[in-house]
Structure formats: C-alpha cells, structure tokens
Image (cartoon, rainbow, N blue to C red; front, top):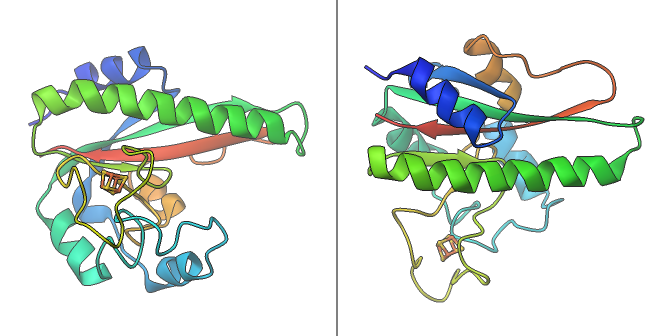
Length: 179
Ligand code: SF4
C-alpha cells in the first residue's frame, strides 16, 4: 500500500499545489475525449508517440491503466489577475511541467515501473521520432490524460479532488500510476 502522506509531502516539495490519492479503477476512458484530440487544436495530433493515434487505441490505453491499482493526482493552481490573464496561464502551465518532470525523476527511483500521465504531450526529446522510428524512451515517455481518453474533471471528482478553485484561477492536473 502506498504511503500517501509521504507522497503528498514529496509532491508539495516539488512545487505542486495539491496532491491526492488516485484509485486507478475509477478512471473512465471516453471516446468523446479522443474525438476532441482528433480536432487537433493543440497541433500535436499525429506528431508524437505520446499522442493519438501513436499512443494506441483506447482499448490499448485501458490495458495499460488496468495494470495499476494505486497512484496520485497532482495539481498546480495559478491565480490570474483577471479571466483574460493568458500570461499567468502560460506561466502556470510551464510551472506544472517543471513540477511534473522533477517529481517524475524522483518517483522513478522508487517506482521504476510507474506510468506518468501529464497535462501535455511528451517533451523528453527536442524532436519526437514519430512516425519514422520507434520511441527513444518507451519506458519513460508520457502521454497526456486527454491522449489516454481521460476527462480530467471525471478523474478528479471520482477521487474527491477539486478541479475548480474559483474565479480567476487555473488548475493543471497530471497523475502518476504507481503500483
Ligand atoms: S520519449 Fe521522445 S521519442 Fe518517445 S514519445 Fe517522447 S518525445 Fe517522442
């Protein structure tokens, strides 16, 4: 069983605003989320092994998730000056990525087989090898929650974690499937 108190301490020390236990069996993968990826508003669809279609079908993603029981959800929350404060949104996103990569490094030593799932596409390599050559780091590459077909609000609600922290706030969410 995971030591959630210790994991929360670790997550907060790496800069996250909130850390909560994740029961992996509560995760629902939705074809509607995949359909949003296909619209390619983030311009990553078909550009990386960690994004659809390179990250596998929903059935393949489900099999990966089914291999885990316990994990954590991590969030970085930013305070905006107003609802159009794009600069703070981008800063918060960059901070969340930083927190994610540094915690990933530490957790990897404790849970070598863990599966990190981020708030964005894999950034391990400057240029992804997709689709010309296999992924350079198949055990360390990470997909986004959306790429797996997860709706962040569903995963948060099912695990008793807030997603919305009030007007003029922005929350970025990722998770680590640990064991
Ligand atoms: S580790 Fe490199 S090659 Fe693999 S998905 Fe990430 S960016 Fe692409």
